Amino acid sequence: MPDSDKWDEISYVISSQYRIETLKRLAEGPATPSLIATDQEMDIAHISRALQELRESELVTLLVSEERKKGRVYGITEQGSSVWQMIERRNMT
Image (cartoon, helix red, strand yellow):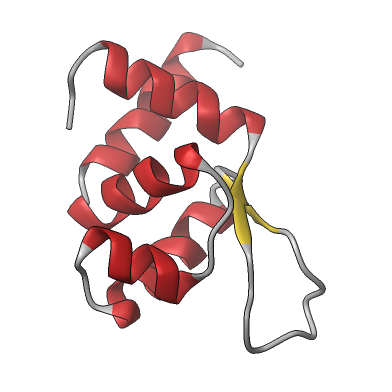
């Protein structure tokens, strides 16, 4: 991935505290939206929206079947992990 694309993704993540907290939590390991909301002390509606946005950007992935509506587990992608490491390394949170 070209550096400019990575900076676009970093900028996208850090422009929302919800995306930051969601990616931060998933960097620790897979989780459900409710677990992320509880761990990060944020409203689940905001976390769900952040997950959808991060998923569309291919930074997180759904680890269970698409048909499953309850107990959905999300994980960080390799691309998401790379972006998160760069955000942390440069102390951009």
